[in-house]
Image (cartoon, rainbow, N blue to C red):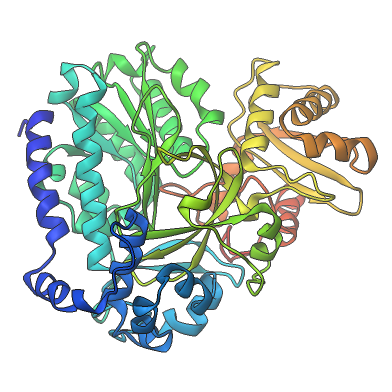
Length: 532
């Protein structure tokens, strides 16, 4: 079926009204409870309205009654009352206090009704995967945002050929594990089960291939089918999209991916920094490829890049998420789960060019939840921002605080000096020697001592704190190069190949031991790669 972008836009606007409306019961409930909310100002901001709606909907849940949501709604300043009443939390604490009961099937606990879907996400400090709640309300928000994003593609003047093409979406398996009334699996599987027929008709690889659990088998099937598809958009994590394109080109002996997909114009990416993979992807294309960054997580859809000529994303403030922001002075407290003295700012209190960690409250029943991502606002008025890394991926010994963005930029720029496309690498803070140690995946011989010098100089240019630390305490970085396949072998051993999986850029002490043992004699452990 051929569906034009214009038609999608018209359809999506109608659908968005239905999605926003919710069920008839919810509409009646909303009208019934409206008098409970005291109106203190003539007009609330979109974020104030979002918080009010979240509190209204959850006030009769066990969590809402325990934290007196009804009282918060009646207070003179619901936002401040909410912040002083509900503690900041992380996955481990929230799981132990509340979430484990919801996963076991309890209703009306953290969000009204039974939460039927849980998305598996990266491992925790205790090992194993996170079970992130995905409520019916959040599913509606995912649909709303997806329609909105697709409808805006027509305004970006990508060309008429995109209209007749399909989107190749590379995600995890769509098969879900059943636990009573609960369904557990990859977010892509949950979204596929609840996907609109509009998107089903315009996307590949199709239901049968999407259900395959084995990543190698799935990739082989996609490579086999590739010549039969007219692909205009690709979506997925850069590391695996890069490898998929490389396989297709090699299998069919192509000079460019555009020989098989001449209408390919847009790559929708997210999950990890694009920069280490962009040069390689560009070289596999004979036509310009537009890139659109997204901030889509199991916890919610927080933003996407609205202007293809501007790499910054726009924060979505009317999509079922209330945001708070923590300043850099409290990053260490967040990293170690010490939340008592953590102060948060609202969206109207943040400043431009200042790093913040995001705290979210959502329509899936996550309340003041530390998602761990670090962002910087480029333009507060337009809510325009970029991701600079994660709290846990901060490389620091004596106050240098290298962000994931600093790390990625420095490695990629240094690699370019040698004509090398460095896609996989990792580092850790060796406090015994007062230096950062780096493992760089390469496809050619590179002099490690020279690489160390250039990497060090680039980091000094990117981060003033690093420059100062190098003057007095921090020693020059130590670099070890190794075949890039070593990174993929390690991930395969830990069952982290494909989909949303990625090799951590910054290793903690436990993962350092596993990585070094693997490199020295192939020994490893059976628990998850990101389970520390």
